[in-house]
Image (cartoon, rainbow, N blue to C red; front, side):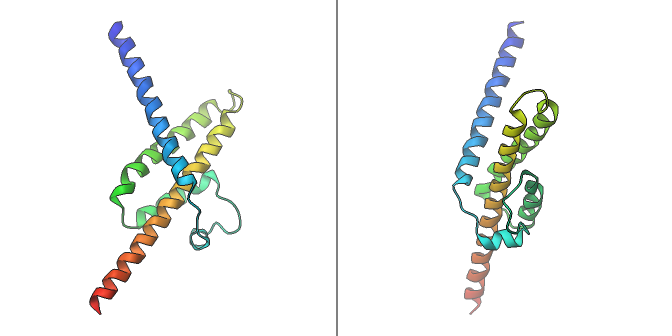
Length: 136
């Protein structure tokens, strides 16, 4: 019985640390302004990012060369986004305010994916420029 209690408390603490980590990553990415060029490439147009843009941004991120520094954050935010989807579907109608909070967090995940995509594009562009300069 004590072992089960310790397991439950440890799991709850792990979830709390994971959510805190994801929210800090999202807060850091939220400070980054997205370029107009990225919004054009992603076909966002004049509208703001929505929570449903996350999957499209992640598909584009997977097409670009991966940064080692972004790998852990991308995996964590992908898991967080999926957990938010499940949480919103299961309890969004039952708990007041939960649907709005999960939608806002999912929108932050979309912004994070756009920031990672912009970093990947910028890195690929600078790598291409460097390789082109080496050939001359």
